[in-house]
Image (cartoon, rainbow, N blue to C red; front, side, top):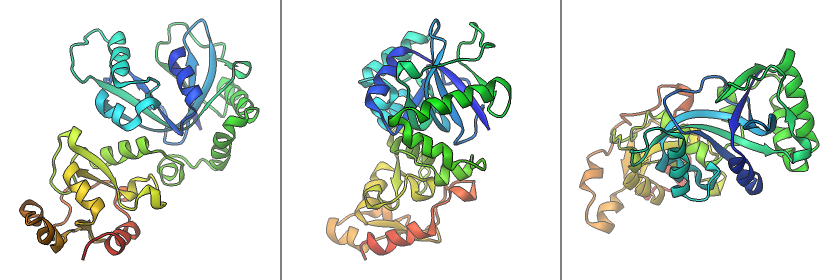
Amino acid sequence: MKIYVGLTDGDWFERLSALAPDEVNFWQPSGGREFRSLQAGEPFLFKLHSPNNVVVGGGHFVQYSRLPASIAWDAFGEKNGVGTYQELLARVRKYRRDDSSVDPVIGCNVLANPFFFAKAQWVPVPRSWAPSIVQGKGYDANQGEGAALWEAVRAAIGSNPVSKESMRSYSEMRGERFGAEYLTRGRLGQGAFRVLVTDAYERRCAVTGEKTLPVLEAAHIKPYALEGPHQVQNGLLLRSDLHKLFDLGYVTVTPALRLEVSSRLREEWQNGREYYAHHGQELGYRPSDPDSLPSREFLSWHNEKVFRT
């Protein structure tokens, strides 16, 4: 198992520690460098800036994604470690040389089940940590300094009642259930769901191929309020109008991945020509990874319980 220690500032840590969210966005002001140090489910730890050379918390890594700041705010809100969208923009521009972009693209490390230590539980970083490190450093949790660090972090988690949920999550990962298996079995939040679905569909509407990101939405096939999970197999990336119609049952997607449009759309609203043009068509834009395709079980549920026949 790999672990990664990323640098963050005290304001980000203190706000999220008080909020105690189910997920966080550990964002980077520049989206130019892709993060590839961890698989999904592996630990991503938080270190404060020097002179505080300590690990103060962490979470399960879910996915890295480059997103406009506005989308990151829509997906995570205060889980970005700031109180408002304007504050997020100000923080990003503080660290960027070129702050002329209206909606700057940032690097988003999506983390599930975060935990935050009280000051008495802070864990010193390994002695080899260099002052010149500006983003973070990876370790092997099975040997040397990495093993010692991870053991100390586990002890800190175990001594913190607030972190018991994260401790259970890590205990369940014995046998190295990382990567795709974690994304299927892990406890993911709404923000992670949006990022995973958006990237699985390569940022295109599954029906129309529209790729204007601000109008694309991750639709739950079975709503979360009805025990539908925040998993990519329970999602479709849809243009906002199609998402609305899908939730209302005027359109559905069959287990054969074909769009069906209810006759009630025309009957009740005397319109719908654009949508009927897609009736019976296979989804033209779908995940390339078979494990990310919509679940037949959830699609059947929507066909039977939501679609207006």
